[in-house]
Image (cartoon, rainbow, N blue to C red; front, side, top):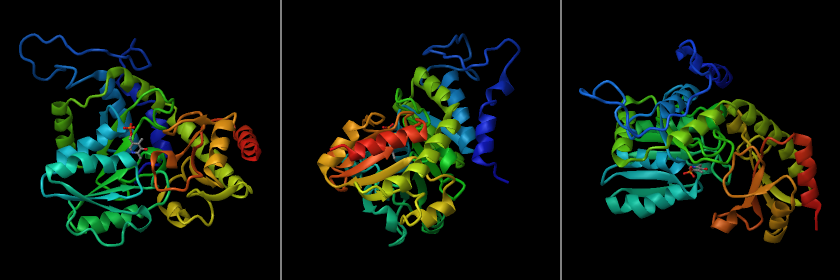
Length: 369
Ligand SMILES: *Cc1c(COP(=O)(O)O)cnc(C)c1O
């Protein structure tokens, strides 16, 4: 029997306790070290900061517990994605990416994978299963997609892609291991930007790769060690601290988003709204079946670019910013980065503010002229 995400979160708070000796600090110590005391035979102990660090090992253990898989930490979400690409792919491979996912992943493929002989195709998340997976070495899914919030059937994609011989990688950044379990649904590898909700305080970049496949993890670990894509101990410590409150924050953020989505959808200033938890949303039925929660991101389209900018910059409880998942609600117009969305499309990341106060502030900003 798989443990529920709640059970894993409850255990996570006491994970460290199991290893404490009497007199040890309860909180995780921050170990800043590049060198370790290493006379004579260097085997079997920590050797050098690029290979080993106790603070990083602790955050990997915690991430691994939440993922229910082995986890390796990276200095950013893109660092984690790059590690999987560059450790698994070789010249002649084809990969499939979502056309509507996180933009930087596609640019990385165009600018760096293609010139090494790895080609890629793009497909929209909402129809990701159409067209089959024959000929692909790696199939990359991001569901819900960022920023459009379309979703694809993880279990169906995984079984068809496996039948075609592909490795299935899921970018689970928007949902975290508490909100969606791609590995349990059949994906081979999860990557995530812990920069977002897992750290949650908008003060660190971080990422991880998780998988049950020992061969994949061995390749990713070796790539990290040789390429030097190592997160610093302080970031590891910050993310460990953030993860300790992830369940409380994520629960509040998702619950508030569930409350706000129908109210915002019914507001006359809102032209269209996407939220997987909303009855009638194109993602809703599949979201009910495969997600643990509906997430904390809402996509809302206002009447114009000017209306969207007024809303984002004029709301007392909204932080205008790119990125998402922080304790403070934040928003931005994605068209400013060239995403294929309407000029009035706003990506709203619901934070931890008390829900009714946030609703009042959002409503006031929508009504401001
Ligand atoms: C932010 C994000 C990333 C990249 O994370 P960084 O920490 O900024 O490198 C990757 N995928 C998704 C879906 C993201 O939202």
